[in-house]
Length: 305
Image (cartoon, rainbow, N blue to C red; front, side, top):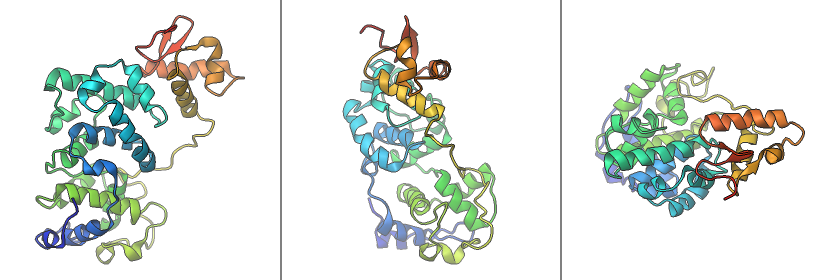
C-alpha cells in the first residue's frame, strides 16, 4: 500500500511548524521496508507481529511470524490449546512471558469479543499484556483508525527534531498531532522506518534525512534523544545472563518435562544448581513454567506425558 506522489501532494499538514508530511510520505513511498506483516490487515496477524516486535529484532520476527501464524492462524486456534503449546512455538524469540500474555489475550477475545480483536483502544488495553503502544499499533495498522504510534525510533526522531528531551506525554502529543488525515497506516510506518534506517541511534545519516533542513539538532552537539522519554538505553549482555538460562529452560521444556536433577544442565549451568533453581523459580512466578512432581514442565504439559 505505497503512497503515490499524487496522494502525497494532497497532504498539506505541518507538524510543530517543522515537518511537512508531504516530505515524509514521499520518502516513505520510496524507502519503506518490505516486511511481511505490512501486507496484512488481519487484526490477529497484526497483533502477533506487534507483540513479537516489542523486544525482538525485526529479522527474527520476519522468520518466525509466518511460522507462528501457520500454527495459530486465528484467535480461536491460539485460545483453544494449553499455554504450553504457545510457549513452545514462541521459544527462541526471547521474553517468553509475551507468549503467555498472548494466549491469555486470545482467551479474553474469545470470551468477551466473540473472537474478534476489538477496535477501541480501551478494549485493546484491557487485554492481558497489551499496553498503549500495542493498542495504538493494532488500531493504526489493522483497523487503520487514526492513531499515532511512538516506539523508541519515533521517540528519537521527535526529540531530535524539537532539539530537546521530551516527556512521554509531549512525545505522544506531537505524534498525535502529526498524523495526516487518511494516511494513518503509511504515516506511522514511514516514521518507524525513518528511525530504523536513517535517524538511527548511533550513526544517524543526517545528510540523507528528509527532515534535515527543519531538524533542530542536525547531528550537531549533544543528542537530545539521550534520556528522552521512550528512547531505549543499552541492554545488559545476554551471554551468561539469567535471561539466557530462562530461554534455555523454556527451549528444553518444549521437548518435554525436565526433572529437577537435569535442571542445571538444561539451563547451561551444570555447576550451579542453586542458580538454576532460583532462575527457574522466576519462570514459575511468571506463569511460564509449572512445578510437577520432581521436575518442571510448561503449563498444560504434565510430567510423564
